[in-house]
Image (tube, rainbow, N blue to C red; front, side, top):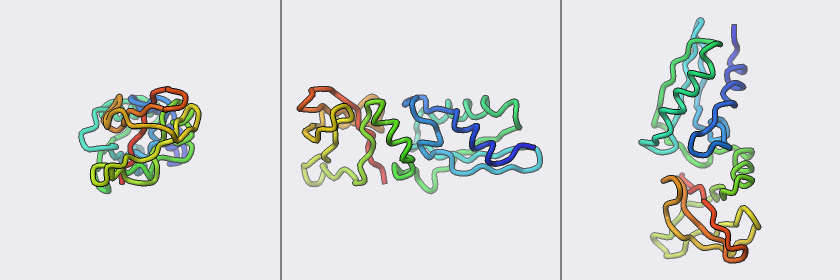
Length: 159
């Protein structure tokens, strides 16, 4: 009989299809693992409503556990996912991959005309500027460092 902890450990092998350096555990999208008799129910929360990666994540979870235990994957929208759920290890992986992790503040630039100050993940300079509110995916913004001139994605803060 497989344990809940063994399931959590196996889920650390499932990566996010949009940011493959992160696991679904790093992202915090796995909310619950329940074992009933000889099957498993895994509850996941999308990073945002309608996220196209969720179907791939569900398929990857099933493929990872297919030889271990029958699994049902359930999506829930409540509570809504927040960037607070990204682990410290996940934030470190984002930086090393060249994506600035979310800052602990909501972007209020629409209200106050000042975008958040985001450190460059390559040189750590805070002399950066937002190029576009949308980056390679809807959950990221495109920035550029004014010192090293490198472009980079910023994983937007969602609360």
